[in-house]
Length: 393
Image (cartoon, rainbow, N blue to C red; front, side, top):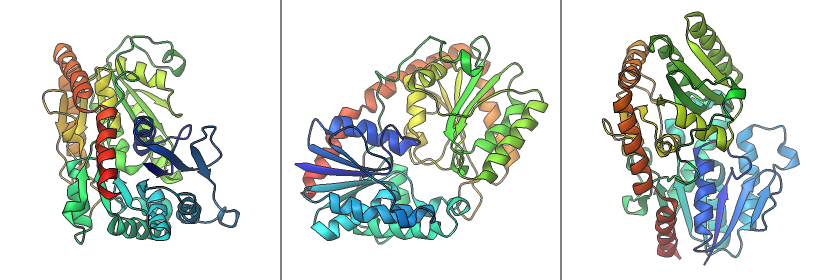
């Protein structure tokens, strides 16, 4: 069986959870099928990977048009595949075109949903309406859909009530527990200004409203005295959110917070060492279909304090591998808390609870490592995806 996997992200350009998913899944799928990968950007060295660039005529256009302009080339290149498998709205439209053009079954993995990310209008302007169009068209036309969590499946059926529930399967994201394992080294951390001799709370995320990073900065002054907060935050969606982050970070430091802001994406080694040395990993997301980074922290033996939204409760077991913080979301979508001050207070209380009880935190870390290894292996996930392929071919 030949499968064409369509994705915006593929190494070395991976900036989010969907890109990590595609990278790890493709490694295992290549053992099971003749896999051809189609991604955005410049040429890749692997013979089975074809990269597609933005048409010259669209180079200065809205970013959403870049994705729509790449879609026809991706669809044409998928000729000869027995199944096409697309990831995120950026590539979903290409998968839909490939189905129409070649009659090839289209499998779509939903990592997030555009109707539940209204803040993207801040980044894409009118392009957000195009992303809604691309996603809706592809979702309703796909032969099978894979949701990365049960919460994501529920969201799919709520956002697209026309969808046949029987077409939607749940296959969780996974984790490579060999690549992510406890690493007591600190050589990668010292050059970044990260100390290993004090209680540390770590957060790693893209700077987008979805990740709740501004809320974590508002939480920071309430953390236990002497706590080092390490925020590895990069790739801001807009200049405006970058400016908001900078202003709140300045306020936090003025209030005595020991804040380390790492502006660039971490190397794998640095990320592993940071997650290992952190006493708590913080995930304040207001929208999170799954959250691979929580699995990465758990695999490194670190307890997680996270919001109880989306698929996070399917990963972080409250009271066993970490602590969950409920969010009373404001009406209108987007997931923002109704009372931001109350949310910050609740989040700080959960983090401080674990900082005050290191032995409990270590027990949770060990339990998290076991859970990551036992329930989220990529080999198992690839086998389940392969079964989806077989069901449509």
